[in-house]
Image (tube, rainbow, N blue to C red; front, side, top):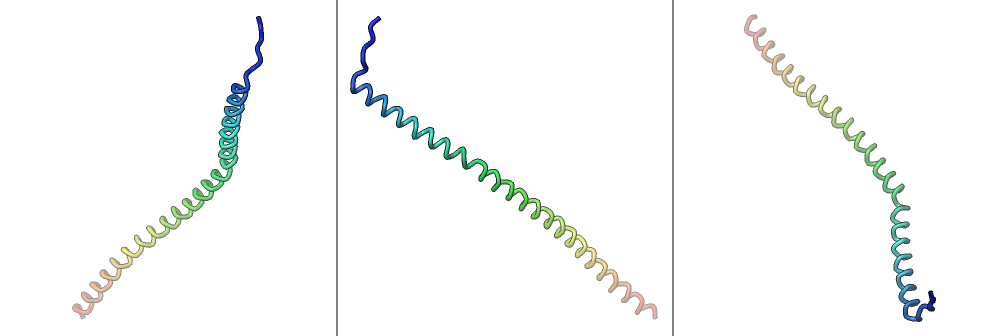
Amino acid sequence: MRTTKPKRGEIIEIGALLEDFNSKFDLVAEQTSQIPEIKSGINGLAEDMEIVKTDLEFIKGALKKKVDMDEFSALERRVISLESRLR
């Protein structure tokens, strides 16, 4: 079997394909290197979300107490009114 030398045009074409492949590989490597940064950002957001959830639960509890205090005030006024009528 006879081997032939690649022609100049074929070498240029292979070189162009190699450059294209290398640039795509560099892009993938760059994006892959950003994954830890993205992951730490997501972890930070998860921590912030936990804080928001805790604050929301606190606010819910405060609102329930507020409603109870309003009901207590209304009941207190009614009792005072009834006591004044009995005297």
